[in-house]
Image (tube, rainbow, N blue to C red; front, side, top):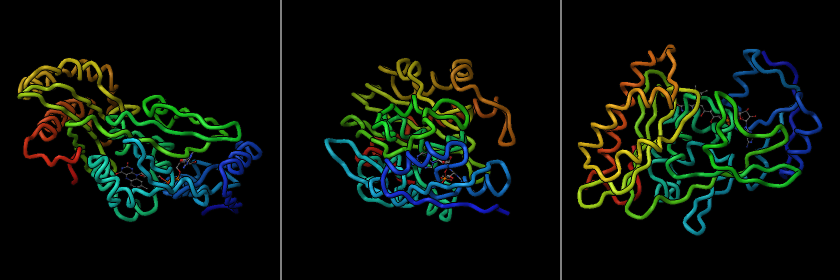
Length: 294
Ligand SMILES: Cc1cc2nc3c(=O)[nH]c(=O)nc-3n(C[C@H](O)[C@H](O)[C@H](O)COP(=O)(O)OP(=O)(O)OC[C@H]3O[C@@H](n4cnc5c(N)ncnc54)[C@H](O)[C@@H]3O)c2cc1C
């Protein structure tokens, strides 16, 4: 059972940030409520005042300007999986969104709620990393932009200040000729492992690549050392290199044993899925749309 709650519905970022500052620990941002209401119902989170940010118009905007797609924090997973502009600009991101939970959660949950909650078992963050995405955070003190990789700090921890609201996510297009894909492994609704790969091939060798892995450790991460190692190699060689990087991946990703599997199993599957993702993204039959829709 939930106790009595006060709902505030600010229409500007200034008002929302002011409410967060005034109510401090007593107030919490609420978007779709998919996480918030569960936590409150189970007594993991006490809050007297919910600051519902869905009435702030900017947080619902999807727009593309100068090759960068801007997605408002309150856009739902379901809208993202279906939106034609998103599918054209960042197809593997749209594909990742289509795999989040089930249609009920996708209709309720928002991109901002997902990124700000920063549950390690999430899909969108991993694929947004290969786009070098940034986030815009706003408060009464103004706006600031952060690379998404710096926004994620640790398990359920982000760089968000207590009076800040996530406004939007900027998703630059992949470089011309670069293809991407997102693959996930799951036993339950939440993913056990998520892998994103983007490659640009030149005469059968990898000219440029971007790799990211999520879910198996505290936060999703890019793998810059591995990206450098496979540059200039042919696909088979790259897959072999990736499969042999268990020690490096263990250090960087810090996998943990949990109900979804042992750290060793997750590392082994990371090597396999990274290889598969490289192969898919490099496939000549791959549609020239920057990604693969599931
Ligand atoms: C059954 C189930 C299955 C799921 N499966 C998956 C899955 O397969 N893959 C996956 O990626 N995710 C999964 N999720 C997570 C789901 O995607 C998130 O619950 C959802 O996106 C959260 O969005 P929300 O708008 O409901 O956030 P809320 O619950 O409203 O908020 C979540 C947190 O973010 C904060 N917050 C929200 N919006 C903002 C903002 N604009 N600025 C600052 N802080 C903000 C809130 O204060 C709160 O701390 C699952 C969730 C459930 C319940």
